[in-house]
Length: 605
Image (cartoon, rainbow, N blue to C red; front, side, top):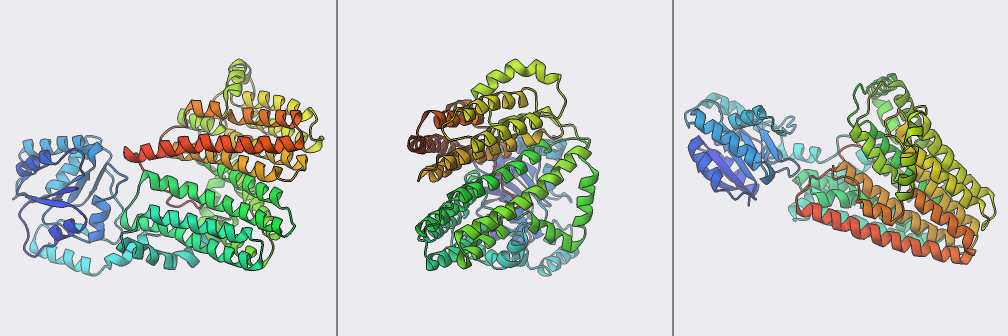
């Protein structure tokens, strides 16, 4: 149980002790710095500890934000400071210095908790200070100030602020105006009944899978039910994050589940639609796979661009300035958010079209909408990259190299091409990545299935992809390299499966791309959480993008169409088992050791 040390002379009528207990703290009283240091030493090292001034006046949610957020080792608000086990030594040192300085007595005018916070700042410790907005957190020095603080507390509805802060500060139009106005109350209902965000996330996944099952029936009633359930799943998807923010139940495992389940729900629904269409005699598996490829590549563009510019210096451009200017005009903000077709708009469109039209029309609309939004966002980012004068760091280059997912073949060839790569122009990496990928996809599409040319093109792709990563990816457009690799690999699988022209080849290809895409998403979430890329043995085991492309092309040359379908199925199962087992092992272990939780607080997926 976390411990709160209440310092100073208790104030008659104060509710601070009961408020701390309501937040789950075991409260101990200390009259001054010496008593506080003694009590601090008695708290077990594996427990959270807080030092709070007995004169504190403020909203309960201000205390909750300052003292219970699990994402920050050190946090403080006026009159209170807290440390998780990882930061206990820093807090203990600051407390000892305050005590030895002789300034921490019950008669001191200033707050011991605030002096400890100042000492932590002086030591260079990273102390999180939550944005309180209209919430009150103060240590009044006299009765008049105390009365004024209490009046300020009474003037602001603590619960209304808490509900409002449960919603993302930046979200899509559909989510903001059609989901969040009531989903926040569902989140509060869940919190009051002890439900966790992970339980709501799981309920959202189950609902989406049932929706996919309804779509797979191929009946009009099934399609209508699927659309309704997909919207219900999205409501729960919003609720889990709002519940996490409302009750500050952040966790490493929860962040991972929330991110991966979103992709699992959407892609499973694509598969359900394709199965339903097949029951009606319409084969749309190529469209379903194309939608998954396009959506995944869109995400990779987002991730690569953000990682490339995560800590870039001189990170400004006229394009960025124009974007900021447009965001200052109210209506353009919502238009631009809708144009990028975030998850709320996308799922609403899919749900409505599923209920009212056919799977084929649904996929056509999805492909057209995603292609337009991908063109819009990528063009803007290319312009920003070309017009800014940014210097990218070694960390950014390492992140892009990890996102590239190069296997042992590309790494070996790249070592031999390093000296050549250094002499080439700065645009070489994205240019050769694009040309090599386009060549292998075009060759697979334009030649007969079973012919040798796709294998030849895959060997050329090995050389071009190796050249693309032969030097650090620090060029202006080098963030395009991972998306080009993803598109080349996924589209090669799609095209070869379609060219095989045998029943079951495209569903098998869908499964293989889904398994590989999961690995690529998992890589992103590890990097965003500062956990590093997946282990090298995993990348080598599943071959890297160039190795998988080469193997797929070789199988298309060596096997019959029926045998190729079977090989795709075996590969899909093998890759899925390896990456899922390693991913689950990693995230469960990270959760147990208390790794930082990285939650999306504004960027629509």
